[in-house]
Image 1 (cartoon, rainbow, N blue to C red):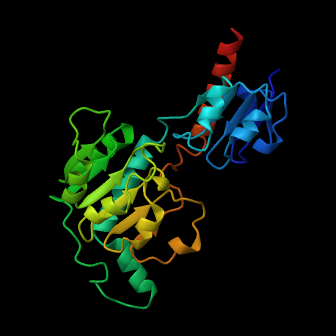
Image 2: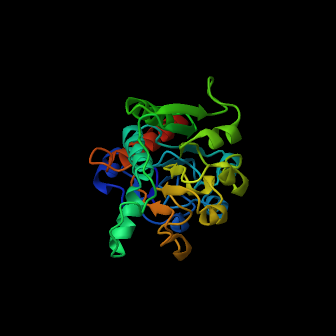
Image 3: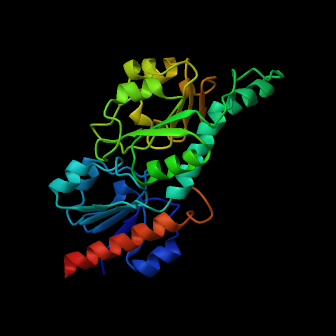
Length: 287
């Protein structure tokens, strides 16, 4: 029986053990030399040193769409198969992104903050925009980007996108940012996309442009975002969770607690799919 280590307390262990009878709960740091598979989420990073201490490790299955919490170079160097769950929450994230886009364009967070301060000013969030006819730039046009665009078009928004891997998009990201009333990020985090929106690019965006990030916080330069008070921003995934004090209390930044993926339907689905993926990969390697 393979030794499988589950490194996130939110995994539904009873169901995981049905799929992977050898599964035991633990931490990545406790993975012994006989551990053959890890089940992890972004809450359980897998650095190179942890991989090096598990010589029997053959599979890392992540219960998330991204793998930036796993040292992919180290995994590849040790011949370890890595899987992610890519399509379990497309509708949820697209719904959440659109809610944040509309909320920012209508000044909802700023109005709520104003009321909480004891004020009653319908202009607290600036002049709200009419959603129909406003311009949305999607940075990344995979499943979630396309689903967000479909929803936005249904509200009468003009939608354009930038994605170097999808035909028909805008090649000039700088020009797209300057054009938009709202920008929504839907790219994976890797060395090419880290800090994609830096201070120079944030400065290209017009005052009160809505910037929504339901992907990874590090797509945007942190210090530049804190300083970009001309924007209205909403992030569902920030650089550390929960966010540090310098991100709290900013009038131009609203944060939701990494909830875009979450619904009654997806509460357990990514964990089950990660376990099923690990079982398939282990079976393939034995065959």
